[in-house]
Length: 379
Image (tube, rainbow, N blue to C red; front, side):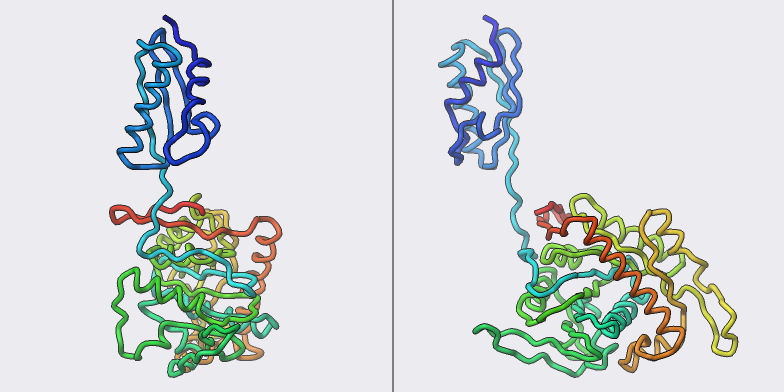
């Protein structure tokens, strides 16, 4: 006897996938049916990963075909399980924070390239422009934002908001700040596994009263690891900024940072690349430029990756000194550094505006951890 596909499909309308109300055809569980004379192959996808559910599905398909189509049919059932991923131990539910308009992740593939310094100076420049700004210091293992804002000895207080106790961010130079550095001793190392770090971030994000912000800058740790995924899982990031020096070692890691955000499963827009320590100009020779770490490496990388080049910041002793004393260099008035950070920040704002006009809002991502590797899917 020759079997016909339509007869098989009609028979399968009589049964449903375990745990689902719709029949197999209506629910879309049946992906394909192939017939060869008296043989039939049914490809089906179910969401229940248990052996019992798979066996029950296979038996019911074989039985309905034998009962309603041909009792001697040779039936093969191929079952694929498409179960929703389980939340990992580091899971933070992604949701927007009311009152915060734009969330910008500042990242670097490599440590020591001045990511936190750039974050601090962009933040104070935004505040000088009249924007409401906050910084979340997500560099759990090496928080430096409190030092750069001269608030390392401060402790956030609790405030009552709509009947709930919330942390009040520390504020200086018009910038609201929360950092793990506020909750540890200066000489205390933060020795935490991923779940503890994720919990701390969760509290600083959602148990804080940030109020109205035009921009929240997130100072991420170096690299592309667990903290980055937790942040992108917890918040819908507007866009990412990558900081690098011109040298090849830093550029190789910056390229990985761009790649992380551009993965299809993450899909966070890269607003652009910033070149820090672009050149050295000694005070006694203000017209000279010495390209200690290489020349225009980050600019060339941005061209290769087809992402915007946001600007360059020179290697100047006063930038380091300003950060060490807790007064970011961009606060200095009528200086070349102030102009450099103003131009850089203007470019960041322009890219945010362009991104918001051209692209839909970013979604938080859903993360599962399997066998030591992270599998990332859009929520």
